[in-house]
Image (tube, rainbow, N blue to C red):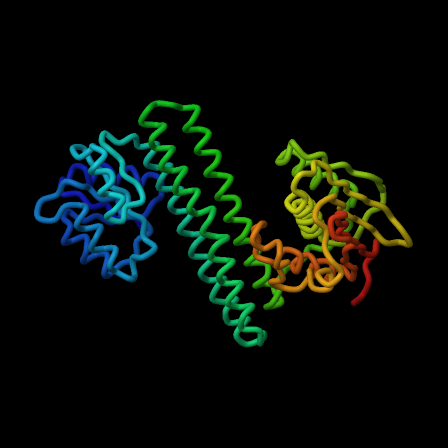
Length: 372
């Protein structure tokens, strides 16, 4: 729900009608004092706060709200028709606002910002739910306390990074719009979208691992073309990484029984890791073949490689190679999820590697259904 705070009824009504027309749930307050009372009683995703109000201005209201624990995740957007100087904009951010918009308001820009904040709020809400489940899982089933602490620290850092970037790009977007620089505005919006996708990808991994632990990870098993599945993964990642050569070797006309989407997820993870952990190189090879009624898919890079000791642990949950953890981001759960997916297909996952000589991650699964 959105709370609009403005002492002018005509402003409240007009903005309320616009937001409700776009299916937002809206509440209003005609003064800072009334707004604070409502914040204590209700949960709001976003507060749109007028700066110029009698008795208690928007800055004072924002500072008071920042002290409310239940409003710690609530975003605040300032609106101002008079205080448009840099010192007032700076004060708005210092008071706890995430954005400062000057009037007259471009309603399309405002709607864009509101939708972005809603997406971030929803992702944070899902993240909090997943983190709670993960903490329970780690507390009851895993005895390694230091791993729990390390994972929470990594997760917080990894999730905060794209979120911080999104906030920054939104601010740059506003400046570009104010300057009527449409090209830069489009660029900032596109970059914000990329960061949101990164955040979403991390959350999807967290949700997957939660489902694995609770036995609720669903599979849609049916016959499909393995060759097309690999082609789709290669094509998608080639478009996303135009400077890298992703070379597919081998082909097959055989159908495979399994969950096409989940197996494509494994191939995408292998290729993504191959690109990430091979700095200074520009080539990845994807091998596909059929041997003894088994599908083999392997992804070879020419990067840093993995030692024998590390190979024994690399598919474990939360495992991250120590000497690489400070150079490469990640939660340490992607390969664990891959191993669980392949296990559900009665297959085998593995790695062939040597330090400084590259790695080939691979999996094999039977072509036909096997009763577990």
